[in-house]
Amino acid sequence: MLNRRQLLGGAGAITAAASASAVSRVAMAALPEPVIQTSADTMPPLTPSTGRPYRPVVTLNGWTCPWRMNAGVKEFHLVAEPVVREMAPGFKAHLWGYNGQSPGPTIEVVEGDRVRIFVTNRLPEMTTIHWHGQRLPCGMDGVTGLTQPGIPAGKTFVYEFEARRPGTFMYHPHADEMVQMAMGMMGFWITHPKARHPLIDEVDRDYCFLLNAYDIDPGSATPKIMTMLDFNLWSWNSRIFPGISPLVARLGETVRIRIGNLTMTNHPIHLHGHEFLVTGTDGGPTPKSTRWYEVTTDIAVGQMRQIEFLADEPGDWAFHCHKSHHTMNAMGHGVETLIGVDHTGLARQITQLIPDYMVMGERGMKDMTEMEMPLPDNTAPMMAGQGPFGAIGMGGMFSVVKVRADQKPGDYTDPGWFAHPPGTVSYEWTGAPLAAASASPASAGPAAMPPLRRPAADTEVRVRKPAGGHGGHGGHR
Ligand SMILES: [Cu+2]
Image (cartoon, rainbow, N blue to C red):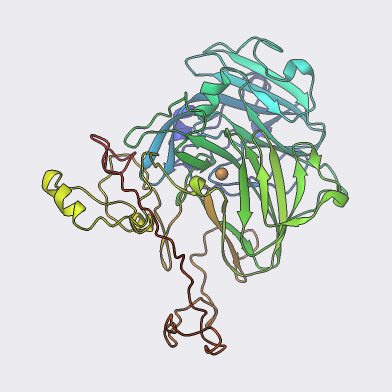
């Protein structure tokens, strides 16, 4: 069997310790060797080689945990441990997770499977795992003090139950929750139906990811665990855009996306260009009579939603949380609103005192996506995604659903940017300029734009001076 060093040497590839058939009886009595993953790339679906067949999911910037069959039982080995997670290229966070990653590997089983999960604790404090949403014996529910003692540091506990109902689930500690979940301990769990299910359609692509959030000061790497709401990194599977993989589909394919929320607030997740149905929740597949088409679905804390749509519009479709603060990266909240404030003259005077003083936000903040600002080491730019038309003014909980006619079935590689057919991209209007404001609306032709109406009253503008020691852009000090 492979040891841990050999696994780590696998250059990020999944090294399956789970090719079970050749393992001796003595080895089967021992702990399954934990499989470790250190790459933050989206791994291809793990096609089951043992047990009942199913169509596997793709975990966004994640992977599925291999298992071994032992006398009819599916055995997994999760190791709770400190990990280094690349949240975006150039930005690494010191998190806690499972098997080398945060989130931990996705566990995929089939309805009716007998599942045994070994959990080894390599954290500096006790932990447990709660199997969120499962029907199971109460003593397997993983709540410290209530259903079991905490797993002490260095010890291994065993959880065993039958995956009784198909659906979309999660796992996370029920032990020092505030710290351990703020540090990134969580994972996805999918139970596939054992046969055709009247409420579960077969789909061509099946994606999953967790919503999570961190508060990591620019220039540092460890989350501030006391933060309750004011997080500065809003992530999918502990990745932030542009570090989140696209979700690709071939034109005409059916796509399912399963999303679980383990942050401290709700996230209205919005898909462009298509309508979707919510086909499942924490409670399992939804009855068909309860489904209606939407383009945004709110996912509350501790909830799971699975959405499904027909990918029948080619293009690069934005897919994101609709809370605009959640599509930004490491931003301080000490930034004053300066839109409309004229800094002419003021900036010149301040520059004499502070040579690198920079005016922020008098024309909005999109400029910052193009600005070369000095950032501390190990900091994600606020909004750094580059698209084919320039900077995409978003980060955080944002990705792109890429629908292509020529994407091969089962191919998850990024096809690059969409080639828009001629004449289908928004363009600059170059007709006659706006009619003079004095022209009466009646005299304007039908093609002219209506004159702007301005309020007669004076607008009061209050200018706030930069506070001492707090100048510049909050969060980048
Ligand atoms: Cu959000």
